[in-house]
Image (tube, rainbow, N blue to C red; front, side, top):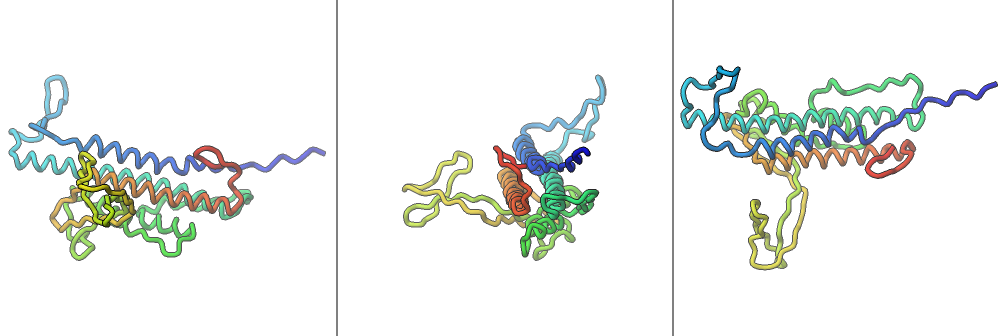
Length: 271
């Protein structure tokens, strides 16, 4: 009589779960840093089609109004690319969290032939995030910021960033909102002092202390207005995805510990 073969093992790689979120956040920061460099001087609005052939965007040199329009559309495109990349990679991250939760529901022993039910076909990141948060035990998931960001991304992608009336859901305006780490400089009397975002200098005549909070940030755009976010705001949004994704990941790790699935702890990842 021979010993029975050991049952097959399923290894959940938590580094792979986090990978899409990390890629999306990194790309967003890089894209906005490079893409937001000012377009100065005359625009090179012709493209080489071959050694002797050029394709001109305008039949004649563009007017100041045409140049301004091109620059505005370029800025909107960069913001669109960043928000789209964040949204796509956040989707992939949520898919992987959901997949792990499907297996974790069975504890350390998963029935042979178990087929997890994915959520890849859900295209709305706010709805998908709400499902994942609820599965992780959150009683009243707040996905309002993801919903606003998804709406803004759609306007940037499908309307060149110009707000149509049917996307203005907040008192006749489109709202872009997120949570941001905000640093304030407070003196001993409780007075807040401004600081120069270019130089980092605190504009105060007395010692101050740094106070950091996680606050709601909001921007509103009227119908016919173009969505315009500063590079600083776009980086804040990338950090919002990073922080909120990290919270979901921590809850996932807690769920795996409760189920007795995590076997070891080492460096940056657990197995």
